[in-house]
Length: 334
Image (cartoon, rainbow, N blue to C red):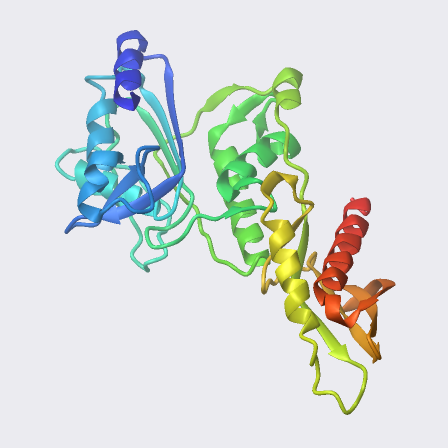
C-alpha cells in the first residue's frame, strides 16, 4: 500500500511540488551490505532476518519508487524516526555514486563523515533527517509519548518561532537543526546517546505555520521522571534495607510507569536528568508496624517529605502507597 500511495502521488505531482515522506517506527540493518530496512506493520519481533525484505522497505526500493522519473516533485524531504536510520543516508550515498551530482552531508558517528550523496535531479532540493546514526538506537521515551525526533520536530514548530521565515514560513534547515539539538539534549538528560543525522544540498520553506497549525500541535504533557529508590532501616543493627523496601518501591514505580498514556510518571533505573525525582528515606520497625519517612529528592535536594505507615506483612501495600503519593505530588507541581 505504501508503494501504491507513492505511485498515486507520482501521477499527480508536478515539478513545483514538495514530496515529504515521514517514516516513524522500527528500522534494522540486514543483508551482507547491512542495508537499512524500515519495518512495516506486517513485521513482528519474531520476523526472521531472511524475511525482513518481505516485511520491510529497503532504501533501494524507496529510491526506485521516488526517483524523478516516477515522481516529478523537485523538492524532497525524507524523515526517518527509527533505529539505525543513519544507515539510510549511507545507502543513498552508495546508490548515488554512479551519478554525477552530489551534495555535502553532516557527520556520522562512525568517525567517517559522509561527504557525498546524489541530488536525484540537477534542479532538485533534497533533505534527509534520520533520528540516529547508523549504529544507534532511536528512543521512544514514555516521558514524551512518542519518538524523541517526532517530539522534537513538533516542539520546535510549537515553541521556537525563530525557525520561521518572516514569522510564518517553515524554514526546513532551521527546523531540522532545532530538532537535532533538542534530541541530543533530551537523550543526554535521560542517560542515553542519540545523534540525529542531517543531509542537504539546499534550503527552502516547506509551508506556512499559522495560528491554526499551531493550535493543532498538541505536545504531550511531560511526565514526571523517577529513578531508582533508596530506603534504609534506621536500626543500626539491621543490615541496610533488610526489608527490601527499595526494591519493592522500584517495582511499583515500574508497574505504574508501564501503564502507558494513563500513567503520570516515567521510571528509569538511572538518568543524568536534573529533573528526575528520587524516593529515599529511613524506616522504623516496631513489632508488625512499619513507619517510613519518605523524602522526595531532586538534584540531591529534598523538596518534599511525608510519612507512610503499614503492616510489616504488607510491604507491597506500603510501597504502592508511597509511589502513588509521590506521583500525585509530582503531577501537582506541573
